[in-house]
Length: 250
Image 1 (cartoon, rainbow, N blue to C red):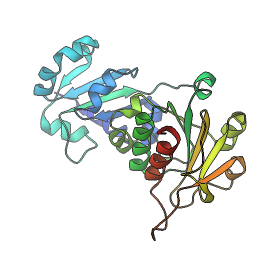
Image 2 (cartoon, helix red, strand yellow; image 1 turned 90 degrees about the horizontal axis):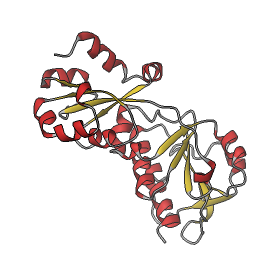
Image 3 (cartoon, rainbow, N blue to C red; image 1 turned 45 degrees about the vertical axis):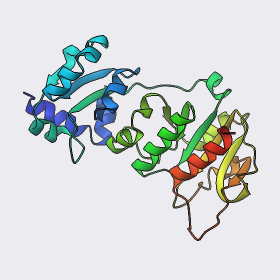
C-alpha cells in the first residue's frame, strides 16, 4: 500500500518548482516507463498494477529495479497519476544535469527553440528530433519545462534519447557563432530550395510571436516554408518537422 507521504511527494512533482527541488520527474504508461528503464535515466521508484509487474518481471530484473517497485491498486494509481486515465504504471526518474559536447555539435544539425510554451508542441518536437537523429534541443528559459508531465507524455520515450538544455539563446548562439544559424521566419528564403548544411543550428520561434527580437540578430540565414493557402501560421512542431525533413531527408 502506498503511503500518504508518497502520494503527496509524487503529486508535488507535477509542479515545476518541486521537480527542480527534488531533482525528479514523473513518467507514465506502458511505452514510456520501459523506455525510461532502458535509458540512462536513474529510476527512483516504480508504482504499478500487479499484472504490469508480473508481465515485466524480466525487464525489471534485468535493469535491477525490483527493489524499487511498489504494487498499487487502480485507485492508488489514480491518486498519483497526471493522466485523466491512468495507464497501469508510473515511474519516478532522476533529473541529472548535463552539458552539451562540442564534438556532437560539430557533427549534427541541432534545434534551438525560442519561447515554445505548449507542452504538446515541445513533446512533438522532441519526437521529431529523435526521428531525424538530432541529438540536442536547446530551449530558451521561457520554454515549457521539458519534465512537465504533458511534455514527457507527448514525447513518447524520445526524451530519453534526445538531450534538452535550457539557457539564454543569445549567449548560446554567441558561444557557437562558428556554426551556421538558420531561423524559421515568414519572409526568408524558400526552405524548399535552401540547403541547410550539417552541422548547423536551426532556430524555431513561438507560434504566436516567432523568433524574438533578442535572437533575430544571430540568425545568419532566414528560411520560410512557402504558404499556399490562407492559414496565418504553422504549428511550431509541424514547421519543425517540415524543416528537419528538408534538411535531413534528402
